[in-house]
Length: 172
Image (cartoon, rainbow, N blue to C red; front, side):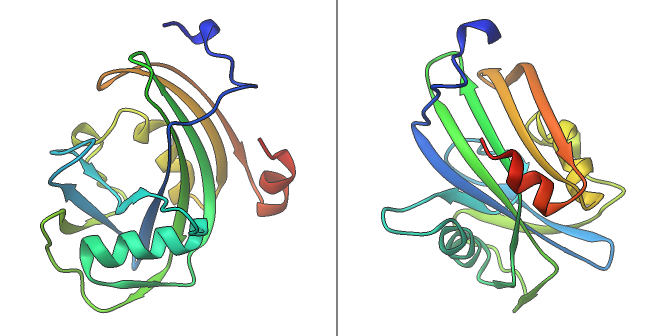
């Protein structure tokens, strides 16, 4: 499958999911993922949206399940669409929180790690993170589409916005 073979206008995800990054004091809370898609990689807490859940409810639930903390006032910052050459397609809504209740604890799903925002371990993450995460850390909003063959990113398109209003108005 190639980029021009993906009909992004009619694209429908197999899964809908969230990621939620807690950023405080120039550090970002990441996880070492222990199981599921991306096991062994560094990422943010997150996962599939359950039937009947809002995006925000799913994002908070996943952080609670994976790290035993509750993020405070999360805000949506990005929308990502991933198409894999094997047919898997995932839509991800990216959230940011500037604080949380509790201290992160390791679970069967994830081991927490606080990382300085200027030392994000991109070499241990999904390739797309290098494309959009710096914009996220700079306070921007974004929409991205990515084509993957397994763990290898083949190509992508990213649009970055300076404000929530411009991002929301762009809708996809």
